[in-house]
Amino acid sequence: MTEQFHVSPGNAGADPRLEEIATLGPSQPTEPTNAELNPDDPRLSDPRIDPELVMNGDTRNVVDKYRLWSVEAIKADLDQSRAALHIAIENLEHDLNIGSIVRTGNAFNVGGVHIVGRRRWNRRGAMVTDRYLDIIHQPQPKDLATWSRENDYAIIGIDNVPGCTDLEASPLPERSVLVFGQESKGISPELLAECAQVRQIPMYGSTRSMNVAAAAAIAMHSWSVTHQYGKRSN
Image 1 (spheres, rainbow, N blue to C red):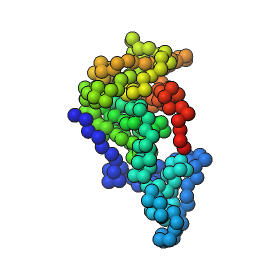
Image 2: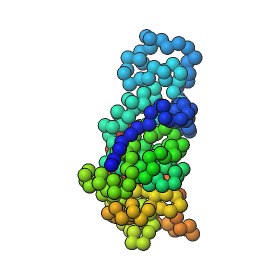
Image 3: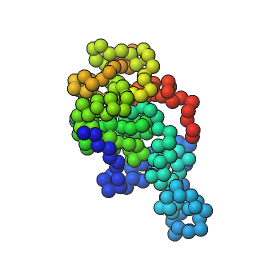
């Protein structure tokens, strides 16, 4: 059974504004005003603006376009330009890398993130970016396979196992679910059995494998170069 869920303030742990503080780069935060909200502030005429952020300042790691927007408004806007790409992460050991992969998924505005296995996953590395995504729980590999068949998606494993082909050997299908396994064991045999293809990232050094979050970023970028590059609107 597939279940879709979203993180709410009640189960996110610490204050999301504190969790989301990160290197802001060219996007500059709005400073707290330390004053009462002015009901005549012209910014408040925009329904996308969060009054609390106007009053308290916006320190979130978001692009300038979304500065002062509410979480709901940001997600609704991202929904208009979601990528066809979905990603799936196997959650058997509460891997710390899952949050980092989710954050990268947000960077590429993926259509959905599937958590396969345990419902609870380590959100620390996501830096609250999961609030802007559709997170879909798939209890078993067969549930992901059912979803993929029903929605005309190809499950593509990213792992260096016997019989795999190189990531660059041919373009990834547009309607791909890229599957990533656990840091220590890779993709489980049960989930590998559901994959239409398995791709590996060619490496040229002495290590046999790379960090799964790094591999996920490379694979998503490879998909993006083929299907997404040049279509960014902001």
